Image (tube, rainbow, N blue to C red; front, side, top):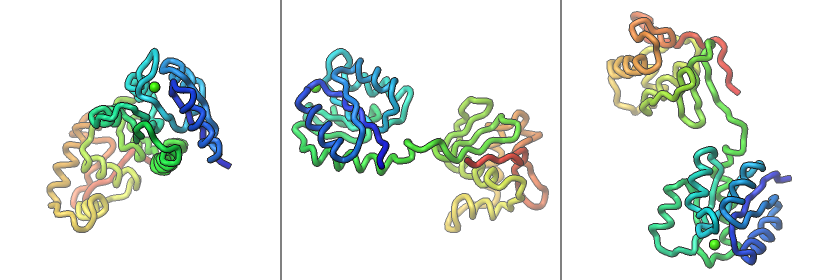
Length: 237
Ligand code: CA
């Protein structure tokens, strides 16, 4: 049984009717809205898994709708556009649409797009997973969205920094040599020197520790390497 609700925001009743019947044939629950404002309202009041959004809408344009939705949600959006010029499509994608179809489109094609997007972003419909928190609750690492927070404020880490912390935090209190960190973080073929890890650790500490000279969360084990600290209560949901 599928429990996927799709919201159609489209002002042309004929098109709504066709899309709706195709979606329902596929087993999806369907909600409809005929202008941008109504679309936002219906979205706020329901658990929506995907939005099919017309670009040219009364009251609030599709662009404005997606902008407002993206402020609060990562729900997948497929744009439907009658504007044929490429710039508008790209604009829609840049605003956060996951895909688009151009009018006139075949309902079958749209169904394929819907399925493809739902497959691709299936994770958004699942509960948030893979959160690592320090015991004191001050540091939080979101492995799914690759985000890091200190005291609830996002800390911007480079990709390498994030990977290194992930390696250390995923293995509480385990001592890693520099070689192991390189291997586990970047893979065997990564051409990094031991000292590059030291530099990364130094930069990480600047970002996440209260006092980088007296680190609480990433400890140096002299002659050996590094380990995480304060993570005994690792919660991997
Ligand atoms: Ca329209």
